[in-house]
Length: 183
Image (cartoon, rainbow, N blue to C red; front, side, top):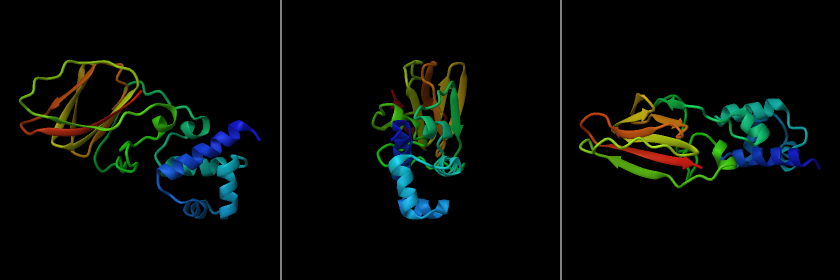
């Protein structure tokens, strides 16, 4: 059996399991019997691109990540505003909206950070990997290189932290956010 196809089947299975969706449910959604779907996951053979595309769209994952196992490189940043349909609590233990780094990189445990308005602005730092911040309460300013990005409760941002960045409160109330770094 072709190892590349088997790895594709494993990525499809891992994505489905991480999103807590049963094989039966996926088979129904894709209009195939359960044995056909099971074979797709176990061997990777004959998975139609339409099925892979459906899963990428359903689970908000880059199609390239499923097909190749490689996460696309994020050059700068991407903001997701509250209510835009991304559920960052979907993956227990990760609270992360993009599965790419689950497969390709080591992910640190989520850290809960509380900032007080009286705190001095943090020094801008750089490090490798990717970083994800999700604002739980209050309002946060992420300084990214030479710009300030205001994030309110429910907003999230993931970015390439090789660029200078730092976080501080926006306004007079404390801000709480979850941060995850994928190395």
